[in-house]
Image 1 (cartoon, one colour):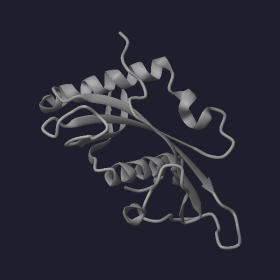
Image 2 (cartoon, helix red, strand yellow; image 1 turned 45 degrees about the vertical axis):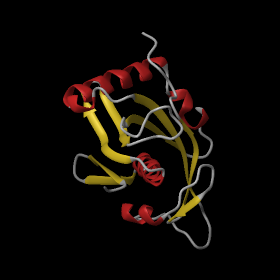
Image 3 (tube, one colour; image 1 turned 90 degrees about the vertical axis):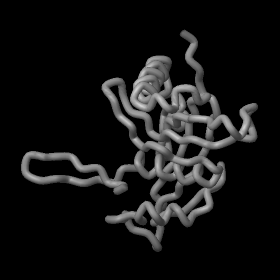
Length: 180
């Protein structure tokens, strides 16, 4: 996975660093370290996109047995310094939550073997800031995604990655529920 997104312009393809992708990969790596298996990334349908879909054989913080895996849909919000929406939390409006529910229902319709698993919606809030200084210049190519595999990620602890400071600010388990 590349941390660049491309957009077509009239005469050239331009690339820019995508902090959102980096934040999603950062949370995915943290989930792997917690024992989760990532089964889908950026799954899309007509209703929207699910950033991360993961499964775990047993979650000791829940009341489920090892024979009943847990399925989790994770929405990741990555923000830089000085954001206005509490690190992305305020972007999770009721309308956004409803859209995520619809998207998850479409995912389960496509994967009926997962329909009976208990599901939840989690939210990961990541801060991603470029750190200026004599040792760093704005990177043309950040570390490849596989470099994240070697990092130990802890909630609230900064990780430096090629001039960027990443922090998993918060990980909210069962951040919202369907009230319809």
